[in-house]
Image 1 (cartoon, rainbow, N blue to C red):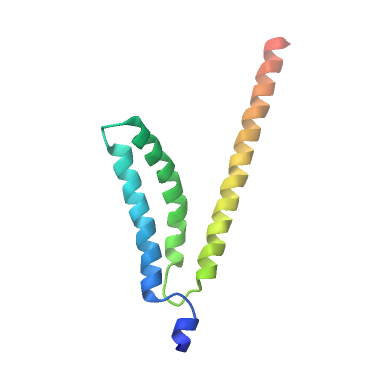
Image 2 (cartoon, rainbow, N blue to C red):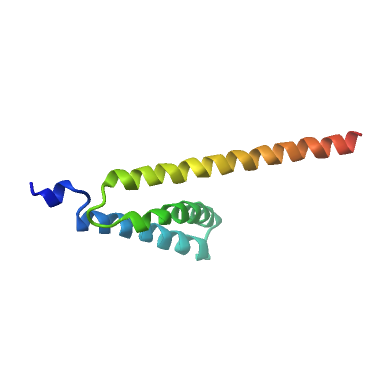
Length: 105
């Protein structure tokens, strides 16, 4: 093995990851705008969110960069999504408590 192969992703690996993310976004858009079934629309909406989050990794898909950095960035994106999700659910619960107190009080 040459030193270039040990230093990070090859040009083909980086292009494959980048193209997979772009293909995911493209498929999501097809599912959202298809006129046939609501289940494909629902799947498309989920894929839009996943593809949007995954698109943050495209700048990291360059030859020579370690795959570990792409995985680490992906884990950070997922962690931030979970934190925002928890804050949103918590806010909704607290708003429900507030409305219930206003109705009873």
